[in-house]
Length: 170
Image 1 (tube, one colour):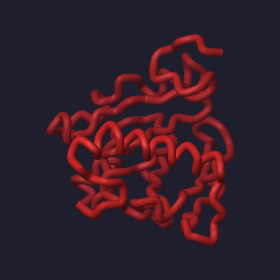
Image 2: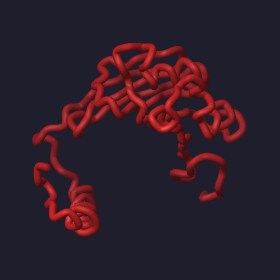
Image 3: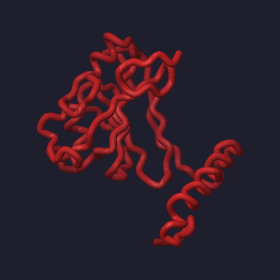
Image 4: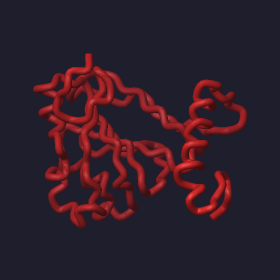
């Protein structure tokens, strides 16, 4: 079903909520204002089972500036925040109220796996682990083929403009 609803339509069963980073707004004083779609609206009106925020705000050791933790404290209804920007490896996850914050670092070193069970306010983490990405994991030929296509496209459309080559240290 490709019927359009508010939010970002990812598939007929999965949609996204867009947030604007504090870097763009210069303030996290009102993080709930950064959401274009309210989580409780999605849950109640659109009947979603889980609200996941893909964030590029980050986790910091100082809780006063740790943007994803501020977001979790300030915006009710987000079940999971998959955190980025700071390249933080979280093991275990961080729990802020009813929100789980996970992050598996940078450069594809880990794949994070969070399993959830329940529904609504009874949604709980069943397990969370970081899976090291090593040469021992076999490549998926289909994914490798897609990567090769995108690598060629990036080379042609961007890197060639600056006389760079894929894999070149800059």
